[in-house]
Length: 218
Image (cartoon, rainbow, N blue to C red):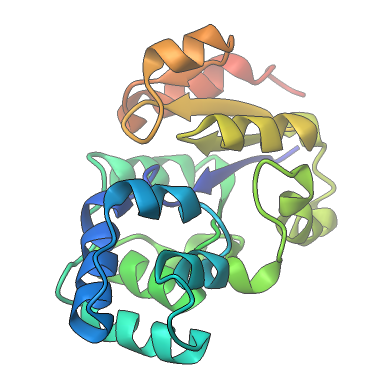
């Protein structure tokens, strides 16, 4: 039976905070003369894209205008991939179905993935903010991407979600999925350990961690 790996996107595969937070701050200042600091952005980070954007900019304008202005700035702050992320994804694709689940906007995600050299056409699905209004830690956030797996008849015990936060873990656990944390994002190894959550310190170690967890032949 085919096994499946689903990745969180922001701060798991890519260094989102280092690029997009600066883009958010620049958009707020340039178009609305607003000063938004990282503590304010953190309150809305990880929510569905529209909610994140309107909250970060304090509902100062319509969502359509906020999105237009933000998109006009993002190219000045290009996304960067975490070390070994593209290489690890390509390695996993040889043995597993691989997908992405994120609360980010579809255009931003697909543009960045393409620019960074990810094999975008090989993912079985990329779930974005447009697919659901539910967000983590609600396990129903997985409903759209799990529906895409129905034709493969894959048991949830054969699905891994890879993420960088406790919310990622809680959502995966609630959906009956396996989980492995990554410590180069928003959560430290100590925080994962305190919750009894399995983790790796780099994506390079992920294939071995997954292989050692799956039961051969199951």
